[in-house]
Length: 75
Image (cartoon, rainbow, N blue to C red):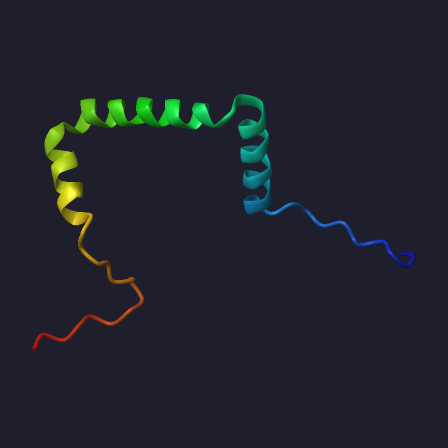
């Protein structure tokens, strides 16, 4: 290899996803993501019902402990 040449390496999964996402954003625009989000939200509402959203709404304000952190001690 000469100076200035880099050894080629395979693209990581994260790099591939980022590259694909940027291409979709460029081709379809940001509105595409809003549209698929609404479709997904409607599908979840149909399959899980309003109780599901009520439950995740209640959990939304709670702090989460990372699985690797120790359990808090009761005082």
